[in-house]
Image 1 (cartoon, rainbow over the protein chains, first blue to last red):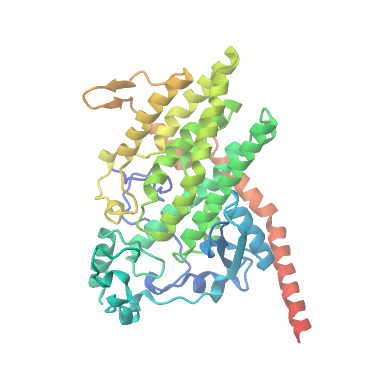
Image 2: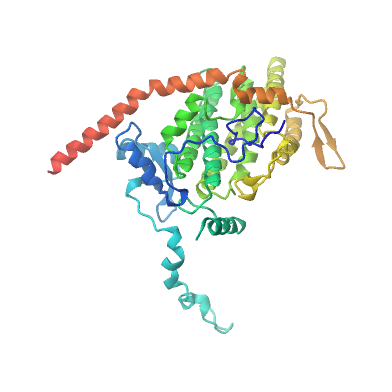
Length: 143
Length: 315
């Protein structure tokens, strides 16, 4: 009898039957598209609109010392007020923040990773924008 | 790029330790493996609240009650971090919850064991969370960005879980004879199930481990289990208690502990759903979900009504 390895948090669906399952089938994914073209917001919020699922929100938190809001994760909530309260409970149980922003995930627009090479190309050959580009004598202090 | 080139490019990124992000190209099998693993991990956090929740009302002091409440609340938070990490892969929350409730999705078998005494809460913190931490520390370096980031947060919080558990057992181990006996009994019952948390032996795996190649995980079951045994075998001495394994012995040549064989029959039995509490856990989850339905609906109706009002006010 052979079994596939599994780990805490990763139990194959057929565990115990002894039939190896190379890729696992424990998923039923609500998308017909390829993973690379998937934007989460299309999948979840689009589906949620008429269903009982609350919409998805992205959470940004600024810590006491922090200068800017940082993306912390996401959560579901019926409206913005609830999203902020849930964000407090989920992401700031240990005083991690003093300011919370939430935005419904479907309003986030993101750059396309497939275009990264050409998209960021303009900055690629401009090393002279960095201070280390300039060679200066060691005697020169405080610069 | 064709599929083959994409896959090559993907593997190169992984080999260079570049994280894979939700919108990056990934092999379908990578995505499926992650959805399964992350959602099962999330389910484990959520179901994991049940055995401990059992003792919130019966904690021996206000301090212990507050600590246990905070810990259980953390588990809820961890479940939510993980569900949202899984959602970035295109699976909906509803689908995952339904799969858990229908019994289609699995969760860690450890939560199918009952918490019979107060000492069990300490033993869970020390042993169960201790075993989970070893896995989770490894998963902080997982190749999938959202999973790794969720794990970093979880690990930071999990450390308190293990420490409070050990501290709680330490108090019992220095208490009356009855308290000492209760402490030892809890260790006896939780030791083997904790070892089982790491899964079957490496030698039983016939497949080349794709998950290791993809760097979803980086250590084998046996490796992690050995680390766990070495760690706990030393810590138990501080409690003045013993581990229920006559074969447990320091091996000077390996510089590791030897230990006895896990009861694999019991292991598979619980995985298959015949553990002491499998049925009870799923029933509790389903009941909570059903009882909460009107709340979810009411909140949504309220949000819609509010939005309508705002719209008509603006008009």
